[in-house]
Structures are given as C-alpha cells and as structure tokens.
Length: 274
Ligand SMILES: NC(=O)c1ccc[n+]([C@@H]2O[C@H](COP(=O)([O-])OP(=O)(O)OC[C@H]3O[C@@H](n4cnc5c(N)ncnc54)[C@H](O)[C@@H]3O)[C@@H](O)[C@H]2O)c1
Ligand SMILES: [Zn+2]
Image (cartoon, rainbow, N blue to C red; front, side):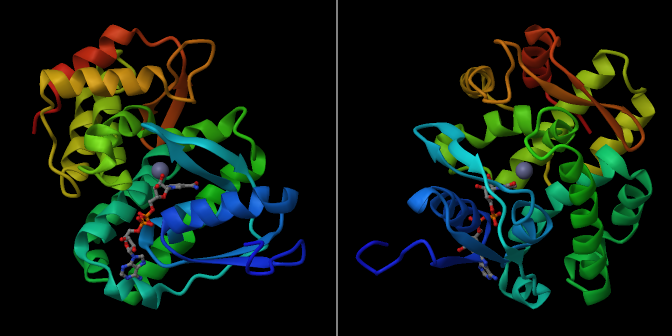
C-alpha cells in the first residue's frame, strides 16, 4: 500500500464476499492506525451479515478470526443483482445466517423463511430484498446495543461455537462458514433439548427446517476430537469456560458458560437424526 502511494486520506473499498470484507476492514483498521473503508458486499452472506457490525479480522494457523479488530466501515453499498452469479451452495451459505436471525429473535421470520424457501432459492427479487432488509435490521438492533460483544451481541453467535469447530476441519476446506453454522445450530439445539431448555417438538421443527439447507453430518471419532479441540481454543471462551448460545423457546436464545463439556462431546458423538 505504501508503494501504491496510500496515506491517511486513502479510502479502501472492499468489493467481494466476507473474506475480502473482513481482510479489507482489518487492513483499514491497522494501516497508519486506521483509514476509511467502504464495504460493497457481493455474496448473500456478506450482504446479510459480515458487511455490517464492524468485526474485521483474519485467521491464523487453525484459529478462526484470531487476529482482528472492531472497526466500522464509513458506508455499506448493497446491490442484490450481484447475487445472480452465485451458485446455490453460496446462497445456502448465506441463508444459514438468515435462519439464525429468525431462531434468535424473530420466530415469524423463521416461519416465513420456511414457507418461502423455494422462491428465495430462485432469487426472486421481493423475497431477497425482504431477507436482506430483515436480517440487517435484526443485526443492527443487536449491535447498536452492544458493539464490542460484551453481552447481548453474543446471541449472534448461535451455532458458531460448535460451527467454528466444524469449520476448521480439513483446514477450512470442507464446510463453508454458513454451512458449518447450520450444523452448529443443529447440535446446539440438540444440547438445548438434552438440558430441557426446549421441548422435542420445537427441536424437531428446527432440525426439519435446517436440514433443508444442509443435511446433518455424522462426524468420525477423529473429527469429533478435532472439533472439540477447536472449541476449547475458541476466542469466545471466558476464563477457560466454553460459551454456548442455546435456544430456550421459539425465536429466543440465551447465553450459557456453564454447559458440561461432556454434553458437547455427546452431541457430536450422537449427531442429529431426522
Ligand atoms: N465480520 C463478520 O461479522 C462476519 C460474519 C459472518 C461471516 N464472516 C466471515 O465471512 C467469510 C465468508 O464470507 P462469504 O460467504 O461471502 O465467502 P467468500 O468471501 O469466500 O465468497 C465466497 C465465494 O464467492 C465468490 N464471489 C463473491 N462474490 C461473487 C459474486 N457476486 N458472484 C460470483 N462469485 C462471487 C468469492 O470469490 C468466493 O470464491 C468467512 O470467513 C466468515 O468468517 C464474517
Ligand atoms: Zn457467522
């Protein structure tokens, strides 16, 4: 950047998915102690999630987003036309985070997503616009209350404690972020059921719905170990305790840091069954 003549007045523009956005934001946050940047997200995941909220960073070795910062863009420009060149797997990747918003805060939105999944996958404009607006509004409400994730913002991590563990498998080459989050939400819902926080009927409703995005996976003993190891090193942990966001009712979740590790191991061993 120095060789290209960049200075404190430079504005960086990130045009691309969440990876480009997180990296550009991190560079903007640290170059000359911070320069302006603008996000132009071009994947569904980045349009509904990563482009707002100010979390920027990069992975290091096998640790997810372990080097990073909170740094807000000066603006975010979203054009849903860009989604037309994405394949269905990338749309589903983004939908993982969208279904998450329904499950953590808006059960009616979750029901609407289930009813309209076919039109959504066809990228019908009204449906996609509704998804982007609703998702960003939910994220905005939460982030405005707790920008630095000291409390309520943690609810956005539903599916992410186990999901980040799953994402690290095979050096991040098997599952996309949103796919891993879907699998994480399934297993965290299973833990909720085991703890008696939600009933079996709601659990089955969640699994039936999420299975339309990603089929449940049975992990090998080796993979279960790898996932557990990554979970134990997660930066979301507090004083050595694993933090889990668990469903407690329709469109409602709560934050727990006292879940027995054995329950997480058991959920990975048993897997979800449909
Ligand atoms: N900062 C946050 O708050 C936050 C939130 C969620 C996820 N993330 C991060 O975002 C990353 C995932 O982002 P992503 O899902 O956008 O993945 P990505 O950035 O890897 O993009 C997916 C693929 O789509 C391609 N692509 C981008 N736009 C395209 C377009 N319009 N048409 C065709 N191809 C296109 C990219 O080149 C890439 O190959 C993960 O690293 C995740 O950790 C960050
Ligand atoms: Zn995510």
